[in-house]
Amino acid sequence: KQEVTQIPAALSVPEGENLVLNCSFTDSAIYNLQWFRQDPGKGLTSLLLIQSSQREQTSGRLNASLDKSSGRSTLYIAASQPGDSATYLCAVTMNRDDKIIFGKGTRLHILP
Amino acid sequence: DAGITQSPRHKVTETGTPVTLRCHQTENHRYMYWYRQDPGHGLRLIHYSYGVKDTDKGEVSDGYSVSRSKTEDFLLTLESATSSQTSVYFCATGLTEQYFGPGTRLTVT
Image (tube, rainbow over all chains, first blue to last red; front, side, top):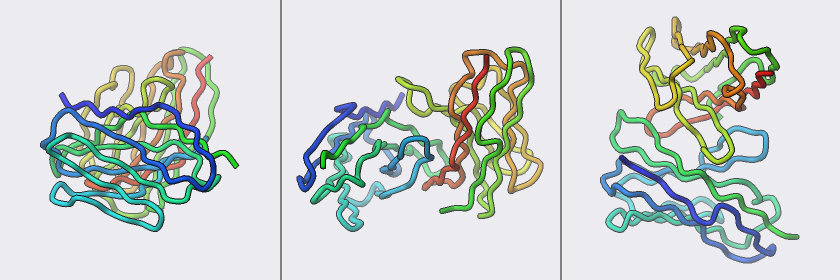
């Protein structure tokens, strides 16, 4: 059974620093991996989607990498801002028609 | 934004009463999902649908039923609400990339 783990559960970082959020999964035979952002009291917003054949995806100050063989993904946030404060969730899909399996998220707080 | 709305956004109900939550999408996505989100458990799949009248159970389906009579609407029903069903419920659509609604906060007293 696929399990997705995100450590740490919470992280506080001073504004302006670069940071990395980690995601690991137990079964490396994934179809794709997705990073989401969730603001308090809100739904999830998709940030980046990495197909199994890809190594990374970039959007603005965000860069997500995927290493299937080691069962790991990282989300790199450059020059962090207070507006980046949110919970970030990692999720994997095993097959094209399969359900998404979520990690429990990392709650990020950027200190002004 | 995939044009997903949920109603109601907040609801307080008593134990034993039936409750129906509605999800409406404007993107014509074939797949729709209901999740619940609880502290310490993250997001858990309740039921999903892969087409009109085609539904299947997720990992926490006990006590819930769903219906999909139109592509755009996916209903989640709690036949007899219990306090353990107090949660935030999210609807999502899409397949390999999912889009989420704003959530419904349900409190069962």
